[in-house]
Amino acid sequence: MQFFPTEPTRCMSNPPSPAAPASSAVPAPAPRALLALLFIALTAYAIFLARNSTNVAGGSDSSGYLNSARLLASGHLQGELRVPAEFGPQSRTDLIFFTPFGFYPFLENNLAPPTYPVGLPLLFAAAGKLVGWQLATFFVEIGGAVAAILLCYLIARELGVSPALALAGATAFGACPIVIFISIQPLSDTLAATWTLASVFSALRARRHLGWAVACGVVFSIAVLVRSTNAVLLPALIIFLGLNWRRLALFIAGGIPGALWFGYYNHTLFGSAMTTGYGNIYEDFSRVYVPGALVDFAKWLSLLLPAVLLILPLAAPSARKFRNRFLVALLAWFTAGISFFACVAFSHEAWWSLRYLLPTIPALILAGLLGVEALALRFPLPRRSTLLNATAALLAIWAIAGSFYWTKKFGVLFIPHQEQAYADSTLAARETFPKGSLVVSGTTCGALYAYTDFAILRADIINAPRFAEYVALAHAAGRPVCALLFEDEEKTAFQEHCPGDWKRVRTVRNLGLWRLTPPPLTCSNNITLAK
Image (cartoon, rainbow, N blue to C red; front, side, top):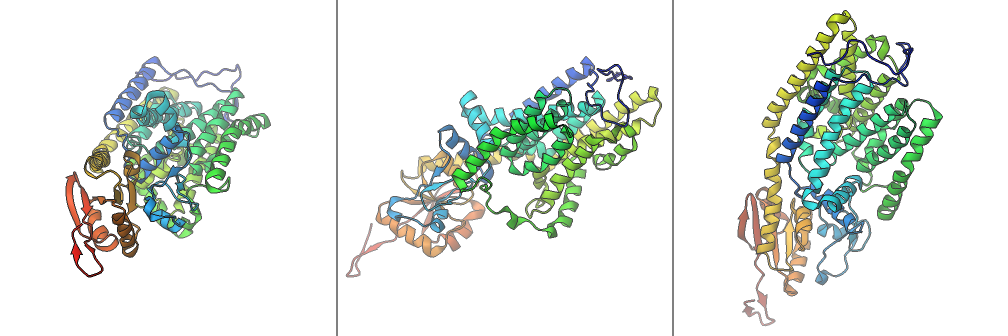
């Protein structure tokens, strides 16, 4: 089957010179058979993600985003810390002991703003109002993943890539295990990539209609709200838009509402329009991380994508028709993301750290597709179609086979089972612990804040003397002290941070539910009384 015409059609009577970008070129229509295949593949992908997704507020990231979303849906920007009344006023240093993951007490009051960017919580909150909280995260995450794949295809077509090859590039992105890993849980990385891709697509379409320049500004501002580091895409977007003052002015106009909200949100919560919940992120920056990060990036990109995509971009400039500003923009897009995160300490800790590069990876894939097109131009026209179809099939099969292997090896599809432990254990805590308990927690603190009304005490950061003071105050007020901890947290918590006479009352999966036995009360004449 031939998936694309041998002669591209143009919307102009005289095609532009091969050396210059086609400012108003319209991609040739893709064959209906390929479009049907794309629709079937996207539908199957959405079903696959839906069957393996979780909407649990679990660890620090997922609970942080969902707790923030529920606050926004209720009309609040900040969360209230549940500090027991008998503990009295707390300094900001002490408030951190009662602060769940995803929040930070910037001021000395019982309010703590979310530390994560507001973009994804806004999307969750809107979806929650629209389809209900049970479906909100599925709606946003799965919809975002499908949209990202479709946008990869559409951008490739805008850049002049043949339909079959564009579909193969979209497949390589969607099949990447890190995309699957992020898209089946309430995290921001896939959506950060989706809105980045939407920005690039809008910039390319703005060549033919100025209204798309406004759309580009709007979606770029959303991309920055979802992840503030997406701002590094700005130089690439300007190159995609071209030095046209009308397009640039409309782009800026489209981004103003998002920029105003960004400034208002940050100023309200953190005291400055340019300060985010991450605080001083430059503390994690250093050039010493760059060599190791680049090696790790290359390693994992070559394993989780068809490895040839790391080399193919080098072939793109060999064809005169691709030596244009769009190739420069792809280079600026890719290098900006790589350069930024190569300097960050936490960006290359493990394979899943490649999540930070998700908004950047499509640039590599798209440049690789242009490299294939450039190489194909060296062959006679009758053979070109067969070559491109065969290469597209090879890339797609390589991507799917690699995805199957690495997804299974890393246990990616086991994530929903792991996350469900947070929901099950907090439900058990509600059923088991007395009302009004002070619950010692570690990794479960965000889930406890999301699913219960308990006051929490962070076992991972409190010290033993301070813990003893709080326990004495709690018991004097008749407040039970309990704990919900993963098995691997118990030793450190009970021996170093929160010592005492702990009794296990229940076990849920790999989490223990514990209760602290109150110390005996003694009278002034040293006679011990049972409480």
